[in-house]
Image 1 (cartoon, rainbow, N blue to C red):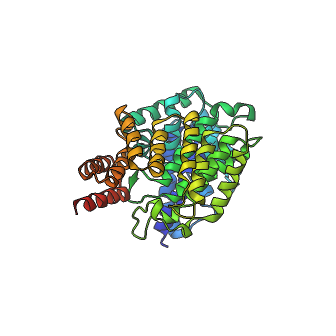
Image 2 (cartoon, rainbow, N blue to C red; image 1 turned 90 degrees about the horizontal axis):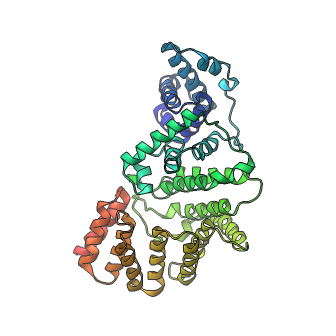
Length: 409
């Protein structure tokens, strides 16, 4: 591997953790981002000559911090702030242990602070701690990139103006931020599970990072939390199929066509064990029910033997906890598998008739599939075209284009 490729790999794996630490040390998002870029520029100059340091993350944090101080000096603002920075013992960053003090998780909690506008908490967290682009976040929220950008700027200004502390709250204060933290981790995972943009369908590193954060969060809580366990189980069960979800060319492989021998059995076993524990509790949580649905898929020997009746029953339970259009769409797909495409299509048509998810590519793709199976070719073609127009992901585009070619032949 060349030094340039080494630096690119370090950027992919370490940049968000380095940024989170720099934000904590510098107490300023913009200054931390400048310092991060300066640190990687220094790495690009020095590492090819001197070699990759033993602890790249610590090297980058140290370099970024001193670059920030240099910037402050050059701007003739070497005042109290810089003096505080110079005194910071953490300048000599030791190798970072994976503890509950993890800076990335700490920053997620700061971004999800109740004083940050609710519509901006998760968007900012995804942008600053996970490196998702504004376009990727907009896709997750079914919103326009400009709207998301404005939310992020507003949230960062709020944190700066209120001087919110960079700390994981005390156990008794965790609950008020937990929902937003869990949703953030799940959105990170979703972007890794099915990237909204780009050439590749999967970003396994992002999905693995979400699972790491889920484990860290579970360890942080004083007692086992059903929502956290449910989310961790859901992510493990979904992630277990990663090696079978694309072929050698990077094209999408539907679950019915996947080679189930490629599924990660260790992750399935861990996820199913968590689900079994959750299902024994008196009250079920939304993430726990979603994990139970994923477990049905993960434990089916074949697509044909999948227990669709049980999956529909679980979706009915899920609607009681989370009656959202996306849950109703997923239930409609399950109904189609249990009762036939006409039944599922009727539910999707009702959903679309209410104006829900009209900008959601998966609604059009799911309708197209049912219409194709019913032999309603022209309507299927129109639905595939609608899905294609809303898709920005290359593997999904190739899949939809393939379906359109099949309908023409």
